[in-house]
Amino acid sequence: MKEAKAGSTVIKQGDEGELFYVVESGELDITVSMREGVTESEVHVGVPYVTGSAFGELALMYGSPRAATIRAKQDCILWNIDRRAFRGITGQHKLKRAEMDIEFLTKVICNEECPKHLYCSCPLLTCLFLSTNSIV
Image (cartoon, rainbow, N blue to C red; front, side, top):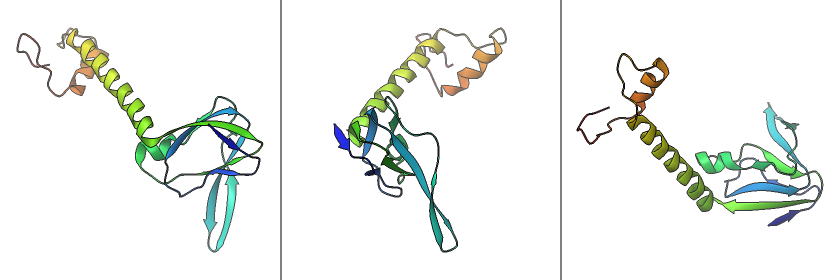
């Protein structure tokens, strides 16, 4: 848990991302630094983060610098998880989803009689060897 006082910066645009945040209470503004020639300004983007909002995932998912600055508009209580835990959770979700897709596709026979939307799903699987040694 982290407390952020009104006016404090939680995430700074351009920094490396290490944490994913969930807002328990409070409100946070999102700004992006824009440069036009030698003039730099901060532009408010999106709607403020409020109770139940989550942010900070892009830098963790893509290994990119923070895309915006997040500043507490009022005193906030935030929950966070680090990059390793975030990747573990999202990795487990991707694995579970892949298992569900494979289970579904093993029950589908892809041929001319197969509904078009299911037939198009089959190429998503590179090679699936069934007990009959068939390749889907």
